[in-house]
Length: 320
Image (cartoon, rainbow, N blue to C red; front, top):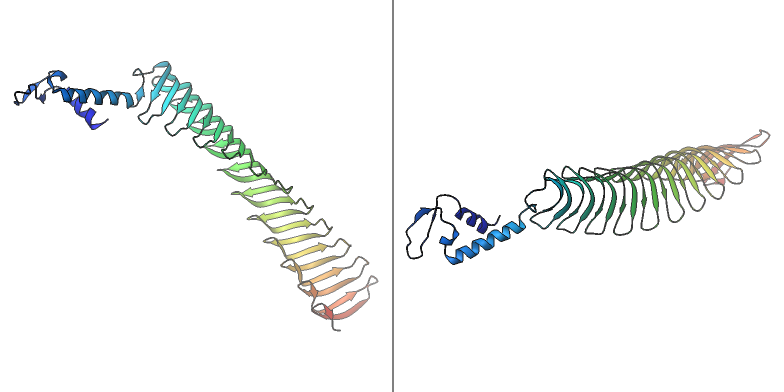
């Protein structure tokens, strides 16, 4: 309430000292009505009280015990719709001073049930509400064109749902607190696809990534990278099964070449590095150390019949 309106209401209280005669400045106690005031005071008070009545919060008509009513807030927000015992109940429309709009079901003074919420920024949600928040199944269309269809919990995307990105990518799967979490499939507009586990919005756990080029990785992931045990197949026909670290072959594994050869042993930074055995498609094999894809040091070469020959290499070149 404005200070002026408060002053005017005080003028009508009992036992108020007021000046009743402009010719006599003597103070008297009186319950006389407003016409005892000077004209300027009367005009000011009527104006202030009328303004206050128009902008203070409340039901138009004083109350809404049952049926339809309209409630206005001092900031200009307005509710029109069903009511019971002076609470929003049934279907109604709520418009805020900021430009947001909700049309749908209410219960116990809150958005409860099905409704449509359109924000002043252009976002639109249609679906279930509970206790003034998005709860249950619904569709959210953002002002930029992106769209989510799925479950909500406490105003956040949680549960199962599909998100359509503006660039054409699509995610379908589990959500928790507005991020990918659990099992889900992400389809990229360029043809790449990931199916598997997510944690806090990032690929993490067991999953399969298929590249549009034809390459495929199936195995463990950590923080969005191939990490742990996994198998990768290239469109060239090559294949690696073993340990990965931050997207590179690291540790023990087997590399199968498209020509039928294979290497079993140690890898580092995507290269043959350490002790290992190289098998040729004709049955021959070489056993010895490697450094950055090259034979390094003493080793033994076995032919298909089992005959052995001692050899030594330096930077891939045989020296003995």
